[in-house]
Image (cartoon, rainbow, N blue to C red):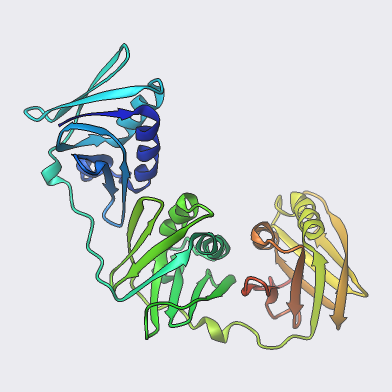
Length: 368
């Protein structure tokens, strides 16, 4: 294998596929990146930890075809420090050793036999459709905040992905909060398909998706494949049953109010400077077009904020986790935020009608 590739292109490609490189050294070859030189396709970079796999193609001048697996972190660190010039790449297959030359720099890196590297799984079509990249990224941003980190409940560590003939939904919950968002679109399926996407996959998609173009999505019983901007990302799905989220979302409320998103965000952020030093709990009191935000007075002190609102309904008072409220205020795009409440023992509901987004925060019972 022999080729020339621009340093910037190789570094960008390695940065993309490294997200799927295994962190555990149980199988050392999985800590590497598979590099394949193909005359008509340039370089094909591939990495996998057996749960997530990413493939990316970059342009290169291929003199001789071939492939090798090289340690990902070592290669990335070297390429990052090289000047933005052409890198001459040669392979010694007797030693599985790669030689990199760039101007006056020379490196030799020991690698692995590429035949021992696992192939990315084939994804058979159960549902297949194209989706706006910007909308997919927006949906992921809004649901990934509510995923759980409790590995004893695997289904809650990801997000439910529901594909209907004319609608796509995403839902996530850690039982203390819930995110629900839907989008109207025609898919190429005549049935309802429900799968659970891992939280780690949501995180990588959120980082890699750009706000242009579209993503091709293919789903079967075990895997999901996303293709966008020259990237192929394949993820194993989470097995298990997702809770019946529709039973949790209230269909009525006693009070609702609208607040300026920026002002509310800043007020909650200030109040949380004190609240987070104790239990991170704040009290919301809504009445007479005024929202009062108080930290629970404790050993670290006390904070009080006020925000003008437009309110319809009864006076409301609820204790909630300040972090849960801040998380959703960060990802909303509207100028105003709409909040619905039933009472102090019922969830607080935040809605964005433009995005068809619903966010629930369960109340924290008073310790007094």
